[in-house]
Image (cartoon, rainbow over all chains, first blue to last red; front, top):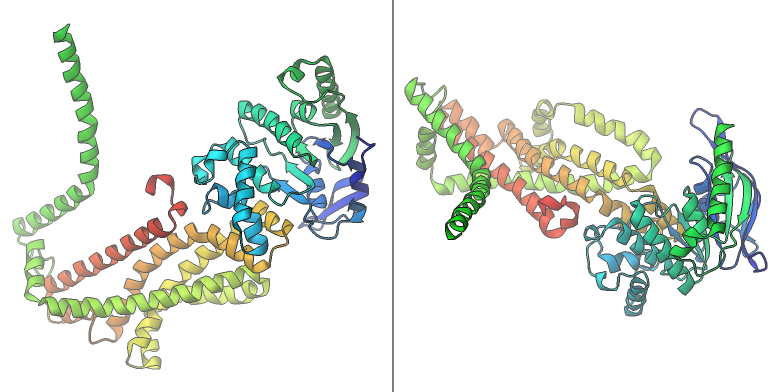
Length: 260
Length: 274
């Protein structure tokens, strides 16, 4: 999708963190890549390769030690409105019902929620398949449903960019597959530029237009893989020879790395 | 066929009955244990002819309690309750904002917190006579003593709760560029509510202790004063009656805390306790 105008750009980004004992840890080193408009980019790598650091750099929650991260060719200097985030855990607020959680960003940012906002939030709940759950309490929802609420919440301010930090990794395997297809459906209805962080190879191949495979400590870009699978993708995709070949290729890469 | 089904149904009934019995046994267990204790106590006092100034029997305590008029009981209980609740209210009003300040300011948590720990480590019972001398003869020294005994758990728990907020929610708040005050109001404080309530339950009983300690030192009313007064005249059963009322008061306030939590912030309770 590099023919699309680019939305996010990493230019030679290095990120070091000071440890309490004074030593510096290099989390990311020489990271350079672009993400195009409405592209679905998956970042794949083992734990400790700085995947989540990438996400926090785009979100403007931290800033690079060296190099620049830019959105629409403007360096990121603070959190921006074009971004919605879905975290590993749903991080919902138990004192609000489902609807209150979806509208929370507005309440939190502006201190009020209008009737139109509530109507829009109900629309988003319908989009994520929870139309009848607006007035339910959070603890009445399953893990998968809670993560759907978190996705609806991330879409509330209609962001151009959706950052997802291993959003399905806490779910059971069946729910996880179901949520992958749900995410593809939601993404096709509301196209966004997506950065999807995962350590699941099948998930990355099924979802993404491109996959960035990272190396651990320091996190570097090992390989950028274009996923040439037709859309819309479905369960049939999982038995597509291209899908299997790509998954095997990545597995081989990560495995040789682990042995070395 | 009919016989078999009727036999089956009695079996079903027996199986159904057993859990019902067990549920009732479970419900009545606390009351039963209390009654058993009182019966054993009464029996031991009579059997071994324990003198009432050593350990009065429950019946003697009830009798002594009835000899004091209801108006007198109300006056003493009311005085203790008033001091306890004023001290408790002051502890809440000071501790929660202070906890917020401690979490927000590294300087304050580095300077004020150690002082609070020192205050907490000083036996307030030993300080109480000094406070009474300094602050004079009014409710004020009693409220201050109650406050000093009750405030610390609220600060510690609130600080813990405010810091226990998931980091990702704080990141969500920052990514929205919300005001810092809203991060505290919308995220951290609500997250601390379960912690705050466990401290409120501890502190309400501490407040009663504080009020009684203060009344031991200087008072002319209140259940603490009543117990001191009774023992000085060797009216031990009467002192025990005062003690029983004090315990009932403390229990009732503790229960009230739980109910307030259930009414106003049910989400902060585990599912089984709602």
